[in-house]
Amino acid sequence: MEKLAIAGGRPVTESKPAPWPVIGDSEKENLLQVLESGKWWYGEKVRRFESEYASFQNAKYGVSCMNGSMALEMGLLACGISEGDEVIIPPYTFLATATAVIRVNAVPVFADISLSTCNLDPADVERKITPRTRAIMPVHFAGLPADMDALKAVAAKHSLAIIEDACHSWGSQWKGKGTGAIGDCGVFSFQMSKNITAGEGGILLTDNEEIAEIARSYSNCGRLPNRHNYQHFLPGGNMRMTEMQAAMHICNEACWIPQTALLGDSKDMQDIADAVEKVWEQRDALAAMGE
Ligand SMILES: Cc1ncc(COP(=O)(O)O)c(C=O)c1O
Figure 1 (cartoon, rainbow, N blue to C red):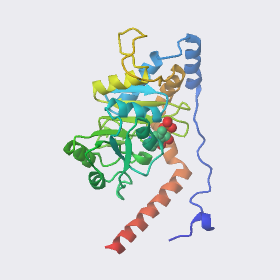
Figure 2: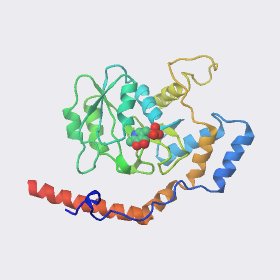
Figure 3: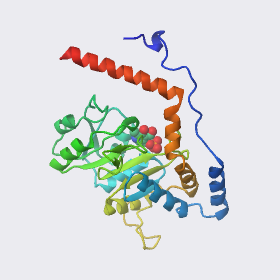
Figure 4: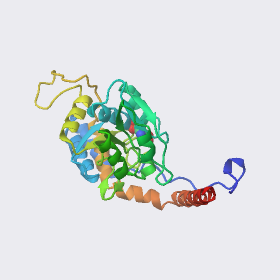
């Protein structure tokens, strides 16, 4: 094995990362439009972003919000997860996957990741199921989908919900269907380091109308459509996306694929991809030695 860079070995890359974020005239124009319109919340731009992003990932409904962490909470609450319920998650993720579970008073339970996907191992998920398990929350780490066929089979066998943490997987698909639209619901983050960003932002996607309505209500102070603004039906919070955020996301739409491709083409990313390839080779060699 090569010497690690931290121990004086050759670094994986010495080139500078691609410049980020990418902005153009359309961001400036759209933001100015919102500023001058005087309509700064829950307007046409938010609605347009929700429907366009949902269709980008092949989902029927999109419910936007402030960030991916809030979207995870909305997903858990909309799937009925509450006090004492256990939710199986991978340990290989950002901390929000676990803290979202804790914040709805449920208990995160770790299952191992599998070497073939670097994501939740369906066999270990099944081993971690107890009478209190209510949901599985796979993470599609770094855009690589978890094995959704196997996880769905485990979920169906034990009547569990699946809430996908798709915060890294804009544009990813599993057998022709966008990630985030495969389980009961899935969520995305548009925080600053993500390929699609407005500084902050999040969305929940689902094909289930009821989950979409409950998530919307949780994100909008417990309100329901066509009811008085001061009628509140759930103990929801204010997690609404602003028109400014949505205006930037809509501009990003033209770049959703090109931006990802741009990163994929950069020398930096190529170096990293080569290094990852080497790790896979070493892993296969180690696995062969163990057999
Ligand atoms: C896997 C994963 N889940 C959840 C989140 C939370 O998203 P946000 O930072 O938008 O709250 C992130 C953000 O980096 C993430 O990487």
